[in-house]
Amino acid sequence: MALSGKNNMSALDAFQERKSYEEYMDEKQEQDQSVAFLDLRKKALYGKVNLQNQIVIPRQSSLISLDGKVRTFDFVADAFRQLRDNLNARTEAGTFRESGAYFGLDITPRQNSWTDAYRTYLDTVSQGFIDARLDTRQKKAEIRTVRQFVPVFLDFVANLGPTIPVTFMSYWASRRASIFQTGLAIDLNKEQYGDDAVSIEKYHEDRNYKIFTREAQNHGFILDRHAPQRLIVNFTSQKMQELLKLAGHINLKGFFDNAFYTPYEEEFNEMVQFISDFYASEFSQEESYAEICHKNGKTSYSLKTRPTFEPATIQGAISDLGIDYWLRVFTFIKAREANKDISQQEFDNIVKKAVNIEKSLDRTAALRYINDEFNPLFVEQSDRKPNFVF
Image (cartoon, rainbow, N blue to C red; front, side):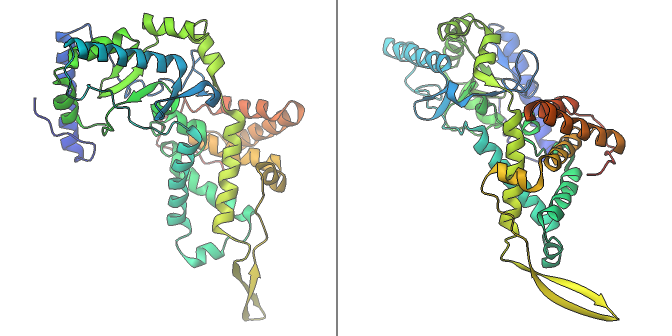
């Protein structure tokens, strides 16, 4: 079957090519029902939520390096090495061809650090703000302090809506966060995702394909329906469950409890850090701005220097503006990302309750409350934007 589909095609052509590819895959699975695939376009949260449907991320201390190219869990690395050893033995026995896309299992190096990937993503958000709100010297001169900057930035965020998240957990729940950051997937051959022609001609029609898919399944992996070069951990596999237990995890729930966590504090700190660093980088205290004064029919100009705001630590940034202020900022972004249609009074009450929880219990409890109110997994699907303000 000849396809030329790539992600950079026109919308109509891409739709037709995708449709053809889906039909090809349906027919392929009908012919061989022993081979299973995971459709990550439908299961985009795979590895990003636990069994209680709570957003979680892997603990970096739980990950190990595999061939110096990716970071994954020890039992996943064991499964991959055993698969590789099996295929090498087959090659020596003459039952696995010494050529083709599946020969050699060349791991694609991947950035597994969620912090690095998230911060790189935020760079695109900040550039969008610069292009939209700081594109002239006059606009920049109108912002004189960090307290003037934050509302302008939040207005920009409000117009982004749910499609371009800013807080980490909303980013993590979106398709912008890669499955590779979960530590539960391994890619081969540095292949570009979404090239249907390559998927078929290079992989599905490879002469090693049937043996590879069978052995991959036997060793606890499942292939991505739209990327046959991608191995994903299959937790329903008996082999993977055995390796999971050998690694010290009683069951899948125990694995998520031990190796993953919900990053309430990290998410909040990243947001504070991002806004603080963004302001400090764009508005140096050494920069002057023109202050215009109209008096007695005359207009005068004087150069003023911006107040210093370059906190050395996150705690310093929080102290400078106050935790109550930052909780309001955080709640506003969360509410806008969730597209929650609430009144100004409802928003103010949620902020007030979060502040009280922070004072009576702790910050984590307050952040958990805010996330429960504006869960990134349950974004309201409406074209109507909320009208509450910061």
